[in-house]
Length: 599
Image (cartoon, rainbow, N blue to C red):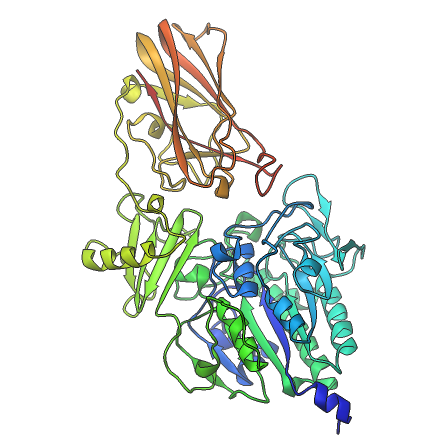
């Protein structure tokens, strides 16, 4: 069918759609190696375009990954190195960063966001404040797909918005709503070039696939079957989007980019698995390959080759300049590089010989085939990490794609080289580097200690005795030596074995505001000679250090004269909620304690 002259003119510039999935594993498409998955529509994109086998997200976590993709900058430069809050009224990605939506709008494109946002929950940081003409979806990290409520922690909150205004669609399946709104947006803008950010909230928990796909995968083991059904639910909706483009004769002149935001989740809410990283180690929140290597595809029938594979390293920050390249615009200064020469086969070189990641306390630098991770985390726990020997983890990805063997002790010169590369980065800090643990002297080394309530299952160090082993944890909260409490207090009783003169009790505490960890609100101590009758608790006020941007270890000293006791009862009060000055005020706060010294 011939199009009208005005439509031909308007459609000389390609439409652009970015399809971003949520928590989809590294190989979790049939065309990427997961042969137990049925994904014909996304596989069609791979056949009609170029797929990347060594494609990375700039972060292994939702918000920073999204911020980096939309700005073409690493998450720190984008101003959102950690997750944005899911609470209305909380800030997110700074508005002075130029988003791809703003650049496309300036180039004359209609811009739309449909799906998940998770980059800010104030008018200026929600989609309409960041360059999108139209927006429909949820602003927080996840929702129930039928009620559209955020259930992470109370109070439960409804989270469904259209152009910044709350809307109610009770009982309507959110993926179907996304298709409905997408069809409307494309149809309304079919005669003008448009940019659509189609941010699918699947297969992120809660796992709520449709009955059709639950039945299809009923013979797979749990939780793989529900996860697989959710992936096919995605694929079916992608197929519906492609049909709309085909019916409107827009497919030929539409660039479609597909990728996952990072690796699959092994969180409790995801039943501790379901997704797959294939041969790669790690998952979401990890800087091992399984946390940051993602499936990625670009398809543009009018201008790029079909059924091609590129094995060179590329990153999500590259989509912004790549899109600008294809629509004939020059982007402002970006960290990402245009992938057009790689896509069209005019070069075989990667645009990123060196790249650096930083997520919480973990960081990584890759240079060629070599990769060094500081304070590595593997949430899958399939292979244990030694909290002291593996604090720096070196691997050669060409020889050990599974990142199982730590080569740091064999190649100290390579460790030094990559450390130097990391420290050249403006967001690196000397605090990121491993340091010797501080040695302390304490009367409590041979004492017995009991905790009234256990620490969080993720941060139990080597048990209560690690609190009195005369070694203080480093500035990294997950170095294996800190006990962590989410919103709860630490209550302990120390038995010195006999009555002794006690002059000083010192508590080691950590503040890392970027990880929602704060110094205790106060410490209470009481004394007893027999373990039955304790003195009236004495309180020492502490309080968080406002606007602390660095990780700080504080030795909080409680001093008294003429105290003779065998038993010491200590309450270390968690601040419970992030303070008002924090990026996520009111959210659950963490308390991290190591080494209670008695002198």
